[in-house]
Amino acid sequence: MVKKVLRATPEDVPVLEEINLQALRDTYNELLPEEYFASLTPEEGEAVWRRALERPGQEVWVAELDGRVAGVAGCKPDPEHEGWLNLGSLYVDGACQGRGVGRTLIQTVWDRALAMDCGGVSVCVVRDNPRARGLYEGLGARFLRECVYEFGVWPLDCRCYVWPLEEARP
Image (cartoon, rainbow, N blue to C red; front, side, top):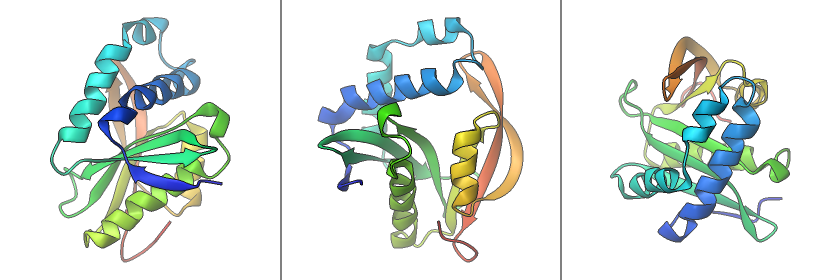
């Protein structure tokens, strides 16, 4: 069971990148070429997380389980839905999956949306990621549209979902 969810700090950056990179490899190993993974360096990844922590309006949350960081979620204002938050990243340590970490982080972002009087929360997920899609759909996210996200120069088909405040709450 998740013990607590806290705002990420600069000290969390190395573990955020470690969870992020491992989750990418575990989830997209069959969808993206090894060239993509070879191009990812811990230094560049850590720089991305440091910028995320400094960017106004962006929040990064960590969930602790068994005394360590087990997952990370990032949210920011949604560029397509004024007054909404976008769950831009959600990564859970593989050893901690299935223990409520992702659900707790989604709930944290939803609670932030409520506290900020947002209209809802949006999220995009790779179409061929059935585990994440199942999580979002199971929490009441409504399919909005298809889209494409580029991992470097490699595009993947995605699905965008929304949790409108007036209709649903995960």
